[in-house]
Length: 199
Image 1: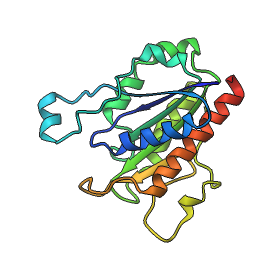
Image 2: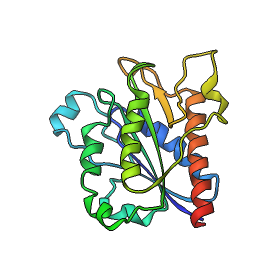
Image 3: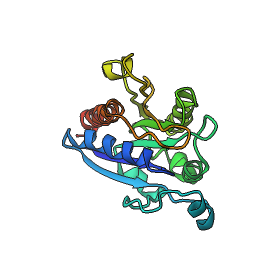
């Protein structure tokens, strides 16, 4: 079976929760799954004063270990419709992997969180997907076969480009059951794809 990395950055825990749901879906396929986070680059005092969730148990990832995975699923919150500097800094260090084509042909996907329904979910997903395409990866989104994203019964995240959640303007909203189901669905689909290619 394939090896899958769920790589994320989370300031307040919303993406951390989504990352664990993505991993749960991937594990359901029999894949070996690691959940890792990128290093926090904000000064400690700034992060503390902003009430960042600093007690996340996931280990920090290293750039040099990315090539050992068959699939990499990247999650990050939005920053003005794009990825935050913490994730960008990590990905900016992958030039050596790119130059060697170390990630060519591997499977990738993206998931995100925004404060509002229209706060940049799809542009943030595409800012992650752009990196995956430059690496030569095969991108797997969240197709409409996951019907939860079509509901009109409640406010819900989700996009054909990847799983999403809506956190609220003050981070007061946690991922809903539908949003977590979407994350599990995408994780499972990506792992199934990687299993077919590498398993």
